[in-house]
Length: 186
Image (tube, rainbow, N blue to C red; front, side):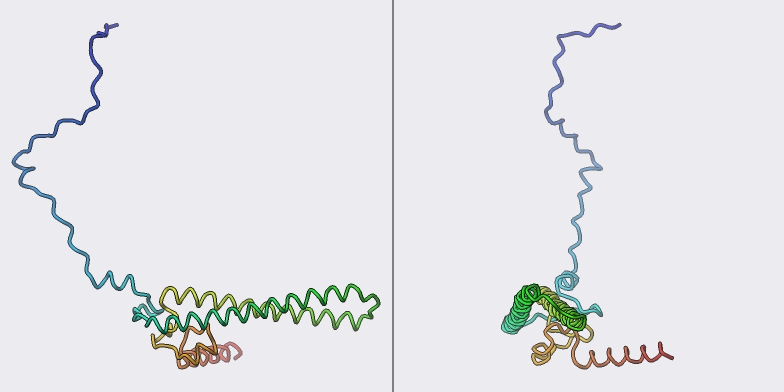
């Protein structure tokens, strides 16, 4: 077994000495990366329609008006949901207090309860659609037709706040769905 001398110092952990430049390494300089095309960057930042076309920027006044309108609609729906919930709670308490009912009364109460649940689900679905519309507003795609890119009119958005299509594209889509349904029946 060879002897190891104890007089050797451990290797220092300093950085290695730089290599000397040779004729080959001195002549070759790294090339800078080519600049990215400016148009591509703009397209990536701009919201896109279903057909891939970018949407022009919305005026701040229109954006604020649409946001206000969506929040008002959402607030109205939330009030309706809360009032229906309060009403159903008081009706449930009242039903428990009443004792004798025949099967016809019970069936009528069950029907009313199911109807109330269906209406509540519809209101909640409408609230969810408005929340999605608020998300599209934040993205910059709300208020523009998803098919043709035309601004959807204020009247249409007031009537159907979660509309994704303009009136013309919506009627075309409904016509196509009607044709498909009639073909399925045949």
